[in-house]
Amino acid sequence: MNFKDRDSVIDSYAQHLLDTLDMDVVLNIAYDTLVGNLTDYTNEQLATEIVESYGEEWFAENGIEVNETV
Image (cartoon, rainbow, N blue to C red; front, side):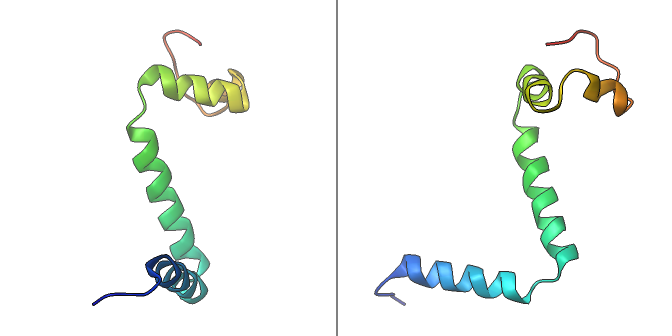
């Protein structure tokens, strides 16, 4: 099957999927995507992103023990 404007089909279908999903499913998709992306980070990249976004105190606030800080 061929589409005249494949990008438009993808966009319309993605919008349709979003319109028919409930919030729990959307949150599960977001979580799975985030975990999948973060899994590819090195420890240094992960720590750097956390510190740049939330500060070094994030680790203690979330009960995470680290051997060294960024």
